[in-house]
Image: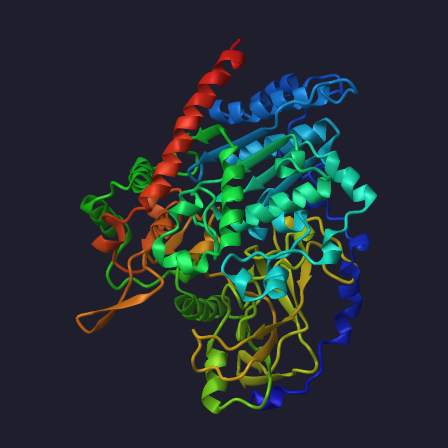
Length: 612
């Protein structure tokens, strides 16, 4: 079957005209424009600020109209006060003012994004949105705040740098720029020097090496050797009790905190870069930790459980609470209710999504199309076993294209690749799949009354979501966006001992979203969720393969996605080992405790001028 896929044509000419319209000059995504206005955009703050209005005065008015709570207002107004100092110092004879480096933290659901939204609104109303740069550590997080990834903002690619510098960079995920990347033209430098405020959201996943790279780029782009290139205000937002960086080390800890077994992979240059990033992080001494829970405000039991997990004091009574309220022996997953399953294991996710897609097809009595991605093998043909194994290996963090994509009209999907960031077609973004555009090179074969099989990917898939509501692309239905196939090289790796040949897979970089990994749901609110509180490995206990202990960060992220215990279902019974004594490392807890102390100091000082 895979041999029959070789030498097939690359794509479908019928959609080329549509694809060509995705050039930057043709795209005017009003929904992603923070300064735009739409009569259907919902409630907005109807305040206009003149250029003579101070930022602090304007900020007070906006905080009141936006109903920010006390600590949200403090975090917001600290930036407003600094903006007044920045703009007063722009005169020829003015003394330079100290840089404000601020962190806004707090558990999930306390409204950190509302502070960001208020700042975006303030800059828009003052007519200086060009002076604000809103970023996040992932495409999904950036899309939620109408921003871009910090990698894109600083003009470097994590994937490209891995390939550029080879194996030494892989352990930390970021490499150096190419000579072409280092050139900065005059207009670009001018634009960067006009920036007053840089925001980076979801900083729990900002690795030390990435932060070092960001700083190097900012210094280059702004032509300054000062920290962060001398940007007047740097604002980090996030919750360090959520997921840590992937293949990097946390900015919360110094290089001396690296455990001994990791020392061999921690080179001298990497240590220097880590220490610089750590020093940059320690500059953020203006801290506001938000603590007014909004997401789980209506469920004191869940709120108490999450608090105990953050403090690391959960006990057997919490195991009993979860099993009593959320687990029922033999209960099936009610896919028809729109529930989302969260699992840390990709293999479980692949199987659950297959089960859910079939259930969705039955529920809607629709046609199921199965697309087998195109595979081209390097250096000879695979054995039958290898070919079958690669078809059984779906998408993961390194492979955005699944081997098999099952499609039913109206099903939820999640995108696996940053395709069009300005249009929010990014890794982790959720959509409803309306229709596929069949590639004539891969015609369908009806294998049953309501199932059609294709030995290759479609030419494209039409997606819709709230973020596409105002999109109008020529030749496409209003409110839709087109996702097309991509090719990804799957190289032989030690974790796939059965793979003997490199292979290139071509298919859609998306997958059904009935089941997601725990990483994919960070930052989201889910009304109904089924959780698998397990680790990503298995251990042999008394001859039986048993899932390892749930990661403490995954434990918190999973349980904090839902507003109520009534909306949580456990796929398998909660075990004592997954809760009792399962807490984050002591040095990370100590670093978080330091932030709480800094927050108390910051809030206390702010009260004096806020109430004055």
